[in-house]
Length: 300
Image 1: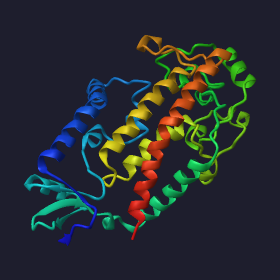
Image 2: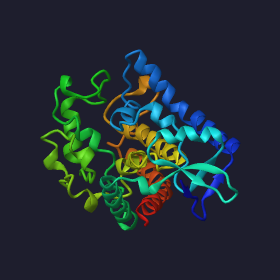
Image 3: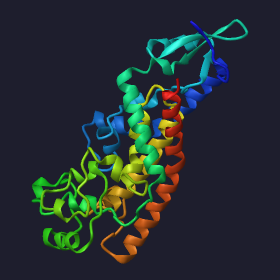
């Protein structure tokens, strides 16, 4: 057991129970529908992505962790000791509490945190770009046959040739590797950039919808050191972005209640850019909180 460090906030048992209950209620709004669909074997072209591509189980999303520099008082706090990242700390009043221990971060994870700090920091100072208009989803179905289309349970809003003319007639400027890698082979040369995994830190920019969705990925990859409220905030942003991402796609999802954002038109592109800029604004404080968390985990 070690002494609690100066500046550590001690939460009374009732207080942290309330925070944990509030977090659970908040994320159940997203996790329970997903679990019900999974139990029925149903697929959802919009929301499945948040739990499959972002491979953080609904049950893990519901778990609450306080984050660094917070100690949990009370006997029930000992349940957190089942995670190796937690330890007991001695309080100045002679009692004990339980807290996550940044020193428990393994060396290989420390290297990841250092890399992530560099990536997020570079994105904070790099200019944002808003001219992609969501055409990555169009490039993912370009020159594909109907049976090759990923969400082929839902129709496309255009036939193959009309869709191809839209893709070929609109500049594609995708900077996000994890979107670009799903482009069809004929679509890749049409992109202004040819991103790779290795140059992500050079191209990732905060105007990109997928880069802002990925704030959720970075948040949960730092669990259990990440305050769960931050994970939930990042998930909420990713959830809202995903809806717009698929509304701007070539799929017709009106049957699911998603009206299209017609990025193939001047009006639709203006609508998309306005939403993209709003998401970039929402992402800024989340990115700053993740940078601060990285710095805390890397501190001596």
